[in-house]
Image (cartoon, rainbow, N blue to C red):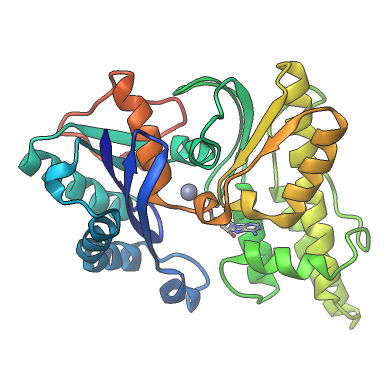
Amino acid sequence: MITLAIESSCDETSIAVVRNGREVLSNRISSQIELHKKFGGVVPEVASRKHIETIDYILDDALNEANITLNNIDNIAVTYGPGLVGALLVGLSYGKALAYALDKPLIGVNHIEGHINANFIEYPDLEPPFICLIVSGGHSHLVYIKDYGQYEILGRTRDDAAGEAFDKIARAMKLGYPGGPIIDKLAMKGNKYAIDFPRAYLEEESFDFSFSGLKSAVLNYLHNQKQKNLDIVVEDVAASFQQSVIEVLVNKTIRAAKLKNSNIIAIAGGVAANEGLRNLMKEKANKEGIELKYPSKILCTDNAAMIGCAGYYDYINGRTSDLDLNAVPNLKLGDK
Ligand code: KG4
Ligand code: ZN
């Protein structure tokens, strides 16, 4: 089965061709990062316009690389939420038009499910159940994956998403956008115990996250150092901030795996590209005899291949969409 997959929920225009859910024949990604850099974050209207300009070319590239034509496609998977409404509408309208013209099934895909499914592409033999930590620019979820498309949400962020915290701290330190990869690199050169930033574990039993207190603590620290004319060692701030984020993410994820008796943990989303998170999670998981899975970096950040994989499992489980499907900017995990 050949799935054509489309992703345009934020600042990447991406189209992929995926065979039988897990074999990626092409995964073309056009990132708008350079365009948004000067604004320090994604400008929704600019993003929508750029998706429109780019999407035709990305489709041609994806078909050429996969060495197929539109006639070889069996179904069309497209992200319909969550994300920026204008950006989502570009990919969704494009997908609907293709589905109508080719008379093929349309599958509306939840972007967060896509991130989870990136692990199925990376590991062809990976099967549910397992614990998955999804950490991206817009979402932080701790989920028990019971089966394909079946989730028990154990925890989520109560305020900022993990990636959002990285981006905001980088912005406050004038490091550039997106902040995650920049802080990740700086952190490697810094002392992670230099500054004692808070760890937000919340209630003892809780699997929820909160990053706004940490964000305020870092902003206060920067402000105080400046007022007292003291040096700010950027590498140390980056390393100490990152350590606060990842310690909480790792400890809660390990606790969730133990609770569910799961010997597999997967991580997903843009922040799953973080070296510090990967290393600490691996170390702690190994100690507990738990196996850690994570997608290669290109599959961690937004891409259409993961949408194709999620769409495939939706399709074989009988979940397709009508052509009146609308974009749902605040779509939740588990919503269909
Ligand atoms: O999954 P993604 O591409 O988009 C969303 O669905 O939000 O995630 C983007 C987020 C950004 O906040 C970015 O700063 C963060 O992922 N990110 C990282 C790293 N690479 C990307 N955060 C920490 N370390 C990284 N290496
Ligand atoms: Zn994403």
